[in-house]
Image 1 (cartoon, rainbow, N blue to C red):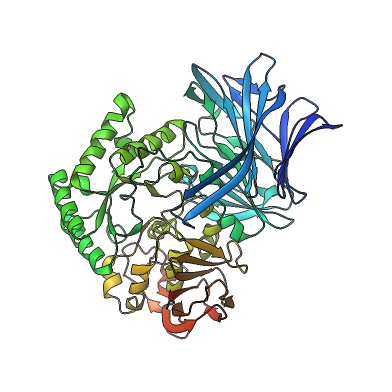
Image 2 (image 1 turned 135 degrees about the vertical axis):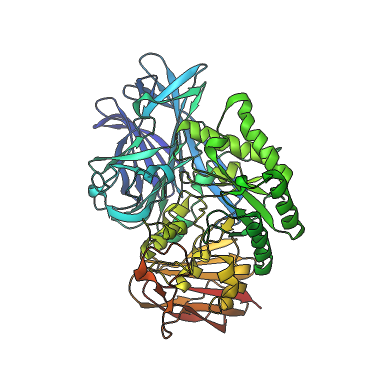
Length: 634
């Protein structure tokens, strides 16, 4: 239950206390009249006194407002998920506060408190164009908190959100990055008292995406790409939800569904039929050669058939083909006859024209639909300005009208858009395996072992897993484990199909690569997991379970208690680091091997055993190694 109490306080003019279970938020006015909040969990501070407010038309709202509670309602939503679990249920209470400025302007703050965290948003009524110049929103973090953030030493950092996940003490955040004090969402916090929090936003619609500027005193402040000049909104302003996800352990953090739950439900008419939204695994030509010919892509369809996969991702270059639409239609016809779906790549700037209800975009999507393709991959938005967020939503909507799925690349992290538009089947906003083919690579094992607890908490990510021919410092078993530890309804494999089919060393894993799901019914994070160090995750699809282990650091042995299994007996396929075999030389197997020190890798070995819920699995992990166990229900 949540109680709302109006209290007197010697340090403030008035205070509202809202609680739900162990989580509590206080809303109050400070001595100088500013609006502020504080969050505790189990009586311990998670967010210390931090400012609230929004600047509209250069007027700061919340500095000298009268505040009163006008509504309190329970909130319950249940919805299907294509991700860490098949069904989500989110319970909370929502309190609405009315703020009255000295000028007489009336605006509102909605606050939600639940077992999964605290969220708030601003609403400012209006009938004409209003300019949002910024927010007073801030988050003061307890001392000695470890902050996980993504870093990229280039101006791409806050364009593509494809940085390496690193950690630092909260006190270091103003100067930790050569790219300045502004960080992109999300930020995962390891709290000094134990437990975790994550700063995120939900329902990013008709607004600019929030970043967080470290301003000292352990505080982050809302920051926007447009800066002080702001961005325009027609009529009513409704900010995204500013979310503080709370979890006692990593299992609760990974299973947190606050972000999608705070997004609007899908339009019942637009998504009355969802049978065309089909999760699956895709082949991809890019890993071995950037631009493919029509003959190459026809071969990729054949390879997808041979590997038992579902899609083929046709990347940049297809628009240079002779008679591109006719040629692409022939490709799609051949693929569809063999139950292989085609996705087509497109550069965003070529269809980002709002004129005439996005006429250019509509014509392009009409043409894609006529070819028989199942979806589009739209790339290089390179930011999260309000104009780009508008582009994203219009693309999702107009693609859905044509029953086309969408894969966003060159974009920001998820804010739960896939709840409102379930045709968004993946998005990048992650430092994925493709950087292993770039001179700025390689991906570290620590980055991989952090992803399930950082970027992937709020939504799917197109990491493009499996790179046997260019795995960096990781092992082949580690590469296999990313298929379990990372999720994406549209799971696009990086590795070249020729190598997958021809390598004698890969062959024992082909049935696993074919069968491993891209979405799950249930997810459990085992307690030995530690962000950036060790990820041990088990996931269920129907009656089968899959265990994935990502190790970052030295060799170690772990023991896995199988009490998560049902009473059934299971046949297991176990893929672990082959510590006794010679390392395999991959020199020359990938066209962009820039780091010669990683040209010899540890292979995996496969064993078949039996298991039940009383089993205890002993797994030996190589340095930066991994493991997969596939529990097949008998």
